[in-house]
Length: 418
Image (cartoon, rainbow, N blue to C red; front, side, top):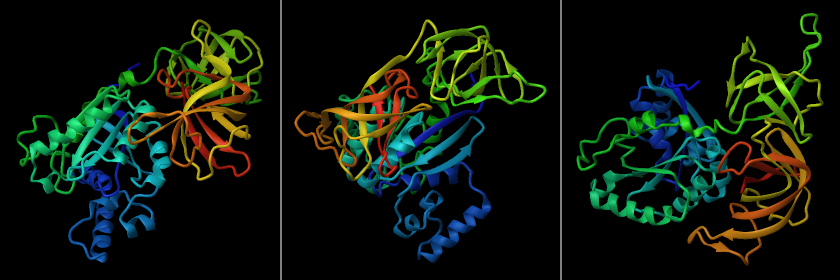
């Protein structure tokens, strides 16, 4: 079941504006020879048109016209590349404070986060904000890239000082695995190739770390959860009585003859068969998309969840969660929102704002109940219909949700269930 060859690693980048995130990804793509010649020619001509020399590596990810004109990242830019050891999907996220919500979006499915720190500036408020969000999102691996080491003469003392500062804030967060790498994205030091300027650094370059991080255990294989996305009824001669429940396995493993429970109804049955597009399977596991057939003809519809009878999620209408607020309009108590959780959508309202996080000190402010854009807080909700959830720390898929403003149809928040 475990895939070891050419595993897919998703990672995100975060950091202040001008810390060099886009340049780092450009360097990673360029030095690992993952760029096509026509892309290279286009970037070279754009660099020359802007009065630069050589190749501006940041342009490999800056896809929007405004981004290229301003030299900043606004939207989340996704890039794919592969090496003989592993496949990668990169989410290059913006550094500006007003685009923190984009960082949350890019980081939500990541196995690892690259947090860039400018060696001249050290740990800043945005470093704390992005680290705290990475901690909230339970990203298993954090790689702290201390960039622009060339501008501090590759000084080991600067590197160690920043590590000490970062360790003091990391101790307040639930981060499992932190690694530190001194780099110069512009010059390529310790990105793909080892630096000749920093022989005091005994660790591996960034690409080597990314290729060898152990991610097989990042997926929850214990708690079997299958949110039903749609009901398959072909009505064809070959499959006249076929009724299958299609969706993507959120976590765990399912096999034919497993005893399952359908939530929220509580009806039980056994799995008759598990079908992919081309064949029947002896087992299926996260994150596979499959169709599950049950032995009994019971009522199952979109938004329901299949789970093992002896290992069930919490079925509740009371939700307690950490929330990242995305919208300029402040959070409103007793206001009607739509809460989207796995494949389930239900009306919800905020019943309590427990505390807000002071992003500088990472302390809890129990008195400030005004929640605006980019604020991180703990909220309680009441939902119109039950949701089937797990704590986010145990299951990132069944423990997360988004909040939609019914009046504007805007996504106003993302939540991690406690």
